[in-house]
Length: 385
Ligand SMILES: Cc1ncc(COP(=O)(O)O)c(C=O)c1O
Image (cartoon, rainbow, N blue to C red; front, side, top):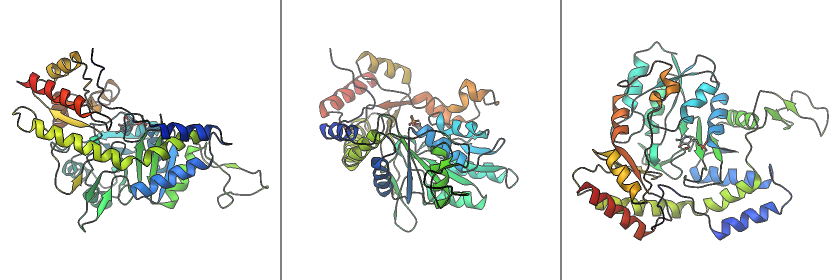
């Protein structure tokens, strides 16, 4: 029988393994030189000033929301088509999540609807917004920033799906997802199905020194040893707990894996684009398949390749019967039992709900072979006809 084809998969090379082994043999398992090296290589890759490595992206979102000052009762606007932690980080701080519908073509937060929410409420009602570069499609951060500035909102860009994705701004410049030019804090995940992996892992980026210092503080129990930040100094050993923080540190051997993975990031993106092009060519002629729509000036990072079809359950079951483990991302967050307790119900966010009824993520990862992709295409087409 054919080996199952997952929707996403890590790519670990012999070089990655050797790099991790070397770090395991070094003097540092955690908080050693590899963390700083990974942070600066990653910051450079996405074009941000500062990067803070953490043990997963949920932790990055949590310290991000904490550093941005989310307090009980603060209202924050979040997209419903995302993984739970994009919204949960607001709840961790006691904030109130207000879901806003998505755009029907990009599946990212609908900026016109965000504008309407802001316009219809007294100034100061909302404190921030969490857009997600969903599936790898970059949010139009330039437009969102303009709106956020008008209403004094902070932005935390969840770029977990989009390292290497970018859009071209109004001056003709490439703006990489999570580069910190528009998002105050930006977040990435290194879970195995993502573009780069460290097993579990995450990164927060920012261009603000003040936010960077807060992110560092919250990552490590709220404790600092930095002489320039201490209230007093009793000597070389002295440290201070200045805030209520967490232990969200990444280990050095994970950072070593991240550094090694980062070297292949562009090659991985290129391969994702080849795979997307092949799917596009195969499916664009099939009447009932809607392929991803990509606007000019947007460079998709293709974490996911999402098609929309009338009979999603039928195709999902058929593909699974044929060892193709297509997946559904995401069940809208506002319809989760947890968020329903705040009054959300079916019909509240019609575009997101319609998206959910018909979406299916097909296998998309750099090591997917041409033969495997051919098989996926053949099975999708045979079901559709
Ligand atoms: C959009 C998005 N945000 C946040 C996360 C959380 O990432 P992690 O698993 O690293 O905590 C994920 C992971 O699936 C995600 O897809």
